[in-house]
Length: 341
Image (tube, rainbow, N blue to C red; front, side):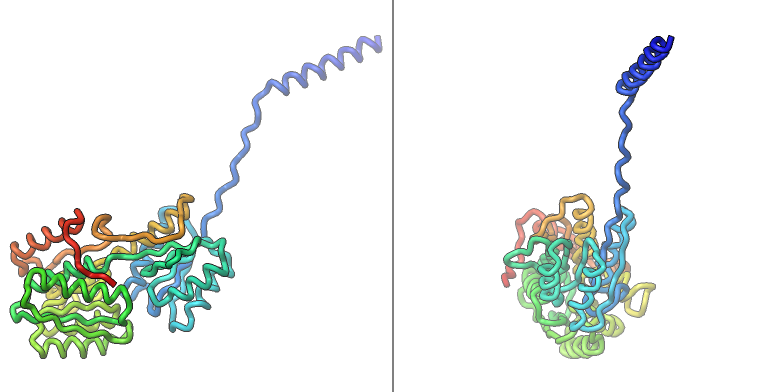
């Protein structure tokens, strides 16, 4: 009897083991992805200053909202703070660090080499040779400058136009040379007045320069220098002179809420910093981030003119058609600016 019971127990155990072996295999639950941490370090200025700082921030926040990321920003008070600000994010183990502006290039390179496992993207700087963990986001400022110059050259009545620039660094030089060449392409006899001001945060100096150019008969002023240039075009617009903004659509920044002179803004020479920053972060999220240089130009809508807004009624159709023709030629690679640095 005892042997029979033991045999039965053994049979039950064996069958149970077979059934267990034939049963469904548990599906492992994948680990919940950890949200990337993205930090942004501005150039000297703030994330709401109407310059590329603001639009770099907007590009980051678009990515943060779309991909559910964690983010923070540090507003730089002085150039001596660049490295310290970047280091703060690096020490807190941020996955992606965005730095804004040509002036922050050396600090970004130093930190990228110190923290090779962190991905960096920098606005307005390209490294040669490239740094493996840094994506340089650069723009063909000469193309949008060329379009701005063509607009100014076609709109001037006095045959004198001006440009108020910030520091004499490559992106600003490209804007200025593009502006000069664009103006002369449609108006060979136009006189172009220009000045570099050794600061991007000196609107009073920009104002002084613009008023000086107006005194020399300039009737279109292009501001290409952050708040310095914006100070120039704001003063010029209040004097009734046509003005052109830079980097972003200054209708929504310098002249937001229809500030005095808003109707004198005929366009802005744009570069899509927001799109560039978003693209860099999206690549990091998708695992396609690569060090090197990403160029945003007329062929991929990375640069161009902003809408005419309230000034459109004052811009002849012939002028609008000519600008559209130039923009199309640039996009197709048939029109070049002649700018070489």
